Length: 207
Image (cartoon, rainbow, N blue to C red; front, top):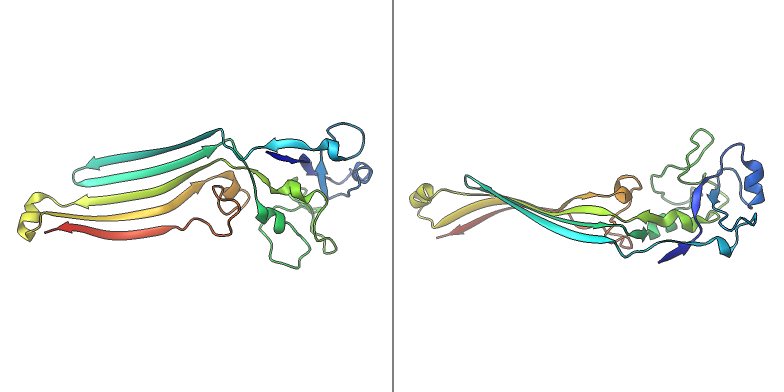
């Protein structure tokens, strides 16, 4: 289970007084005062989710038509929460290191996603709340398309069988973690290397 403060947005222009009351500033991370005592303390932390998904499944589709064959392997997980160390370690907006392409707050971009850059601040207050994401995803693990030559041609070539094919390993992933937040891989959120995407052209023959 993930247990932390609840991020509700970013302090906006006109909220200076409330932001100061909670020890923050406009452009800083706004968290929920759960117990309503007028301050942010350990009692405001909540269970944010679990890395155990509600549903895990896979499916393989196979099609054949006039010598062509196609197979598609799909894998999916739904209902889990992931914690991204990259959105934690790369959340620093001091301008001293390479930074994720994120939707950070400015006066001209009053977003509620990420706090404003600050050259004097290495890590924003309540920065850990930026690292939790919906871990649901659908992955296409494998696509394989092939063509088996007809017996008439095989006889002329003096072959028992001949099949050419193309395949793709891990060609696609559908996840808000990658499409919206530029995450690497929702299946393995703690790795620094995404799943290898491989394309292969091959021939199977039997004499």
